[in-house]
Image (cartoon, rainbow, N blue to C red; front, side, top):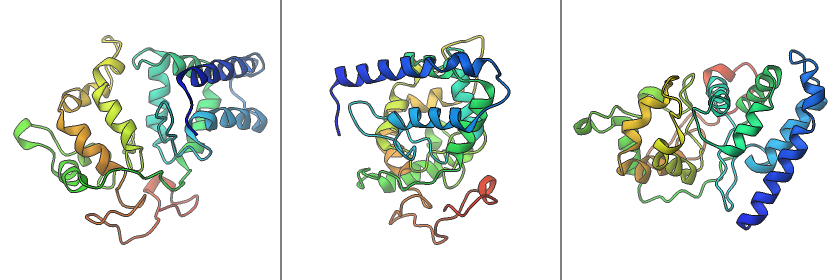
Length: 241
């Protein structure tokens, strides 16, 4: 379902009011967390990011959170609060979360594994694969896999890119300088991506490649023969990829 810009803004405004209305009880004890409170926050997150945090295509592209590295999610939530990353909506959302809620939310999203939304154009998959695995030596750009892992499942603060909506990845790269590194006094990992994001060819190749990586959705040029296995940090919970 597609929403007009006004409908989406009104929806976000109403959700923000409802969300912040629960803060008083949560702030009474920021070290403990009830399942009722957690479920309420998860329901709130689903409104924008999808029922299984698989992302959402509408007037605005909402990123996939499912399967994301916990350290990455925690870092991004702090970045919103510290204004290192620009988002007026997420600033309010992240600022309202207690430490216990952040821990519970990132653990929940990390362990999800819904099917990706797919939809990435196929004509640039091969070029994107080459860029992801080999980088751009002539521009001194390292392979994406050196930070994000051979299957783009992320490593620590470096996010999981596999299965991410290609429109979101492309938009993020093209707007990197406007949305990241907002506080020069607090440099973070976003500085590493600055020169990479400025390459015009990156969003046109890598964003399409990343949503096609193995273990998320088959890719004819880079198909995984291992089926749906989990990345290492999640193997104890249940088989995912």
